[in-house]
Length: 299
Image (cartoon, rainbow, N blue to C red; front, side, top):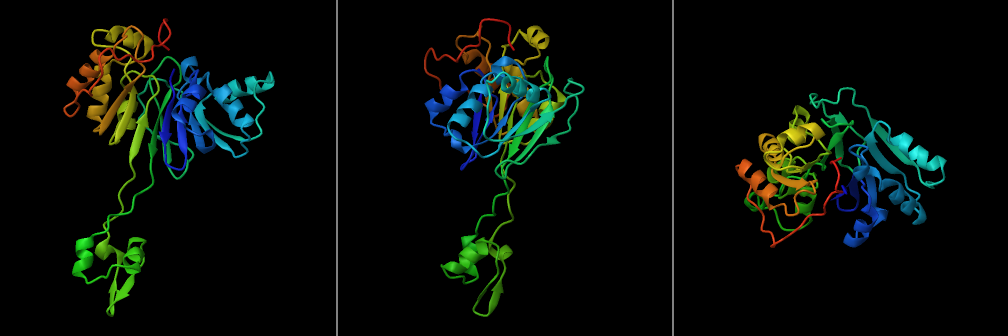
């Protein structure tokens, strides 16, 4: 089932919460006390049915801090239904943002701003799936420019607190000379961006979301030759996924959401790698197997 944790350092974000998400969090040692937000791409069960149980666990663990939740229109009604029948009784507020997609064709490249989480900027875009579905881009804050030690030596800047003040953005005076931060510190660098997709076929929105990202996490449900079925179910082949990432200039690509028809996914990995100018297949142990989807039509 689909669930992905994006570690921000002091806090982390969960993207989707399929069944069994809580067990995986325990397995990998992610403390729920550091959970800052939950982003739900769409309301198919394999992406959302673990959310009520996770929220209940947060309540049992004594959480009182608000939790940011972002997802498609209808997520609030889903959670309210669980609350109405007594499944959810939360002692902490949910700060819910629902995303409305009136078109569902993935043609719009408008990236919609979402609430900021732990200083990280989040935007969403409507993808092309059988139900309203969004992808998310999470961008870290700007990073300080690098300190130029060679320039500091050339200016006669001693080792000590003066260098720290310059790195923090303050001027210092050394030997009667004023040294500005820009003399020894490079300009700030843009924060790293990660794009995490829900289920989708290739579309303009997908390329816009992935544009310039350091990392793209994208579904790869099918192999070559299954394009017609991918279109019918509104999913992507591994080659299509790699094409989106390549054309968007993304740095790295992670494939997810494999059909259960592929007990070993090496074929999908190689098809994606062949499509990318920079990608190379990762080393895999013999007979490695993904977690399979249920034996039904894909969600």
